[in-house]
Length: 112
Image 1: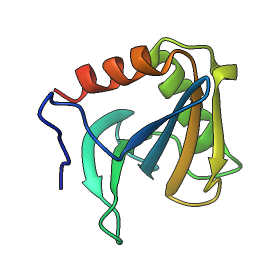
Image 2: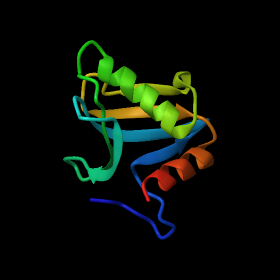
Image 3: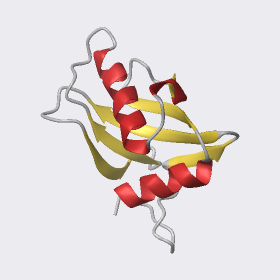
Image 4: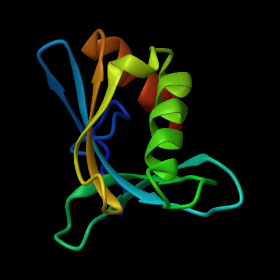
């Protein structure tokens, strides 16, 4: 399921917070390559960004790869990406520090 508003921006998979964005993610580890696949619905029907990480879910490798991938993809420092919830789960909540409108535009562009 993809949730879109009239302007093409995905709604619900991320939300602005003071100083950045909060992202809802579903991460699949041990994939062939790192990739942002789009938007899907979680089990409760809420939109989440679907990501695949090549790193295995061993000793935090997939989480470290996720932080590095998001930082590079969104043009921020790794220190600006924080896993707030779901460190041991496929469903994660991540905070990205930066200008919220700019980050949202970058995500929207990646999903087109």
